Image (cartoon, rainbow, N blue to C red; front, top):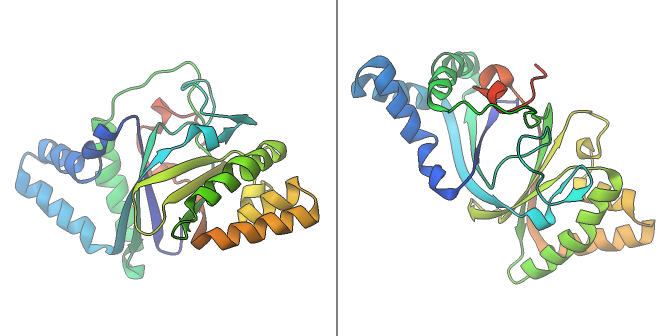
Length: 251
């Protein structure tokens, strides 16, 4: 993500796979690779020495509120579309500013290789797309206002995404810090609606509806949320692993 912040995204086909991500598999693979649990523990302590902050969340995708290629719902896997399975585990980390180069070198040397050995091969004739960029939106609804938020997303934001050709995955929090909804906008072109300098929901509504209606809907959206956080991130294939087995290669 830059500015010392990084996102680690783990697409999960089912919730049971949650326990095979992050700590468990890294420690297990390092134990095999380096021949001892002590070596694995040393590596784990080393990576944490780089981190200033860490936050973990798990979200479940809502197909009826997601739009890919103008269609509501998730496309079939392996047909060259965006697709990130049914659950998304997100680890947000902030690295000490004087340890960024050390952290990135550690990830490339130890994490990428471990994941490459751990992940299965997934050959497909047309791998799913990995975007160059993504906008993430964390939303916390006001107490008692969640039904109104769902109504706005379903009846106005989803049609707006369809009419503007904007891809978006909508997730509900399984466990998360503060936000109970998470929107992921993958995009390749920086001229995309998702790359707006404004709040992306506002921009979608402005592009899809008459000015007065868009303003009214945007005000309604502001009234049903207690907080919103938006970030635009660049994908780092050089710090990722095994991507060519599942995603279309553009790097």
